[in-house]
Length: 386
Image 1: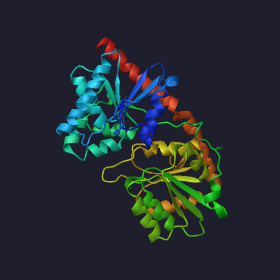
Image 2: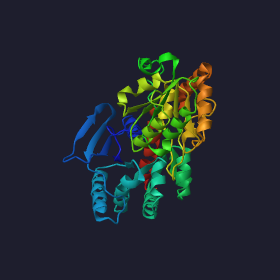
Image 3: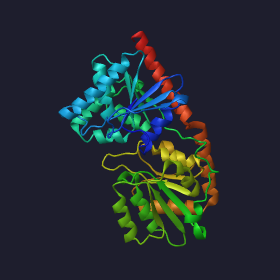
Image 4: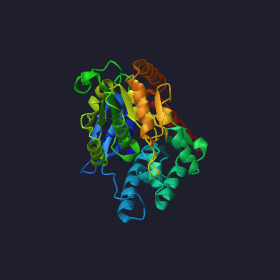
């Protein structure tokens, strides 16, 4: 597994990769994870899952192959992949086409092992901003033995690049339903739910497409007759802008920035809220490929509000497990918040439906089983030369 994104990095992709690749059965997994500060390999053995994490300085200043420094780094990682392939039946799994997939592509062209690539949506949207990156990404996906899309929305993006449908496998992210559950300790509510306040929660990087600014605008349009506290967990480039919005609307008593919440504490914050929201939108091509946070909130029995774009409609069933909004209309979002805030019955019904759906269809065990199936299919083809 080649990836720049692996715990202790934060975000959906690191969570996904560790959750799935630590659950693969009957498969020895070596993760080559990025460590820019690494001066020598550091291996961490997890015997229960036959998973070894080896830190390498994988990152490049640029993804392209025209930059000599980037090309040298890709070639170095490709050589490592080629050596792994010489040890027997090895398949390289790439966290993304760019940059990780470039090394696997180069290795394959020179007789290295077969590889598969993950696609998340936002990574494709980013590469499409550059003609060179679009060309390179397309070549990487095309030469892959298989591509895994995190949603049907991302699958359509791959198809638009010319990838054959039978080369694309949709495997949704999952959630640990034992870790995220309704009966998690909720002592945090006492800090934010005084005077019967409804607690809203957002979890995610502070970037424009997540829609934190729209949520703040919506809160500003709710009268004091709707008492609430809005908690924002996460950090990022938009922090100063969002704090400015809060100050402009004088919402310091209603909106609270929590910063980066440790992963071990996230279940408690989900359990402490009444409504989870992340009214995402497409921002200059940047799109939410799926949204693991919606599953985490649903597993905790909380109704969710998400944007009607990207893969989020696959994570949130509108009217059943939560509500979908345009992601651009503050009045629309305020009305949805007001409706859920005023109806404990509706919140409970949506939360229960969300928990049931996650337990049935979105576990990490199920996702890992599907990845194993794809891996086995590729291995069988490689053995027979078909």
